[in-house]
Length: 141
Image 1 (tube, rainbow, N blue to C red):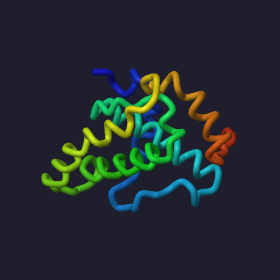
Image 2 (tube, rainbow, N blue to C red):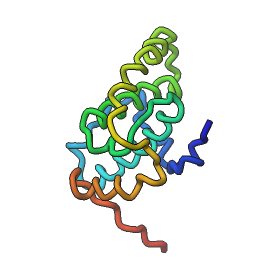
Image 3 (cartoon, rainbow, N blue to C red):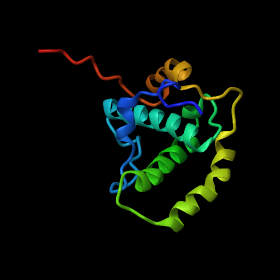
Image 4 (cartoon, rainbow, N blue to C red):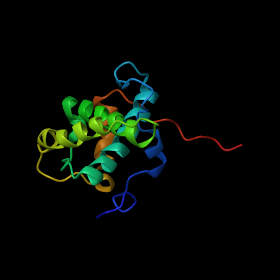
């Protein structure tokens, strides 16, 4: 099995997956810099979830609003089990039983999602089509 670091996923974003105590935040109401961060978090989550659950996510998923929303929802759902004191075996079983349906949504596209190789296309799309603005580099004191 390929590890997250081998797939080129930014580890600094993995702890920023949507939390269980917060409703799934949409990106449309965020300012451009916050949108950038939201999509970066989702990109990291996509790589993590794809590896963990063998979702078969295809390159270009970020261009499809349904896939974006489904990934955000799935990331939030998984985080309720992973990062919270939420124990619901029935809920976890429902999540696992839904995976085939999720895989069907993510199967569209010609090539497999590769976080390292797809990063430039993803970030170009954020600025051109999602109204995101990459934060300026922080100045060191």
